[in-house]
Image 1 (cartoon, rainbow, N blue to C red):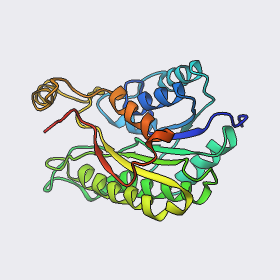
Image 2: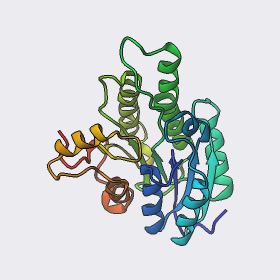
Image 3: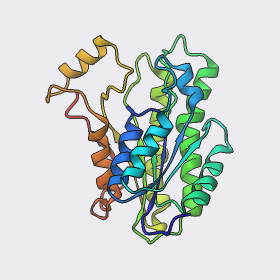
Image 4: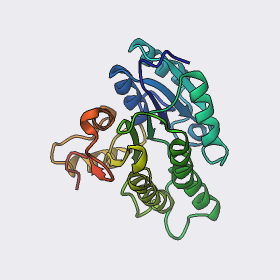
Length: 253
C-alpha cells in the first residue's frame, strides 16, 4: 500500500514492452500515477510473437524509474473470477483504483464460415464479458473524489475476416459507453478509443504498407500516440469528454 500521494491506474493487457498497454503505463507513470497492470503469458504463447522473456520486469523497471509504485498481476480474464481477484490484488499492493484502462484482448483471425464456437465464445469472454466484469468491479469499489474516476477501453473496427474479434469489440464499445451514464452518480467518465493501425509486431509487410497508404500522415500509429490521449483523458482537463468513441487514428480511412 502506498501513501496515497499518487492516484492508481489499473491497466489490463500489458504483456509486451512494445504493446500499447506498456506505452500507456509508462506515460501515466510519468504523469504521476501508480500502476497496477495485468498480463497473461498463456495468450502470448498461443500467438505468433510468443512470450517476450523478461517483459514484466522490464515494464516494471520503466514505471519505477518514473517514481511509480507497481503491481504486476498475471490474470486470465476469460475466468469470471479474475476481475475481482485483480482488483483485490491491486488494492492490497498499491491502493484503490482511480482509473481503469482496458487494453486486453483476444484476437485470432477467422471469418463467418470458419470461426469455431469455442473461438467465438473465448473472444466474447475476454473482450466483452471481462470488460463488463472489470467495469462492474470498479463501479462497486470506487470511492474517489467525484469527477476523478476514469474508465477507458481500447477498441477496433475490424470485421471482415476477423469476425469474433470485431463483434466482441463492438460489444465492448456499448458496455463501456453505458458506464458514462450508469456510473454518472459516482462522477466517473467512460470513453472508448479506436487507435487505428498500430504495429506492435503483428503486422505483415502487406498490412503495414496498406495502413501507411490509407493514413494521410503517411505513417502508422504508435503506442505513444494512444498513450498521449489516455493521459489527457485521465487528467482533470479531460473530464468533459465522456461517453465517446474517439477515433485517434491519424485520419486512417
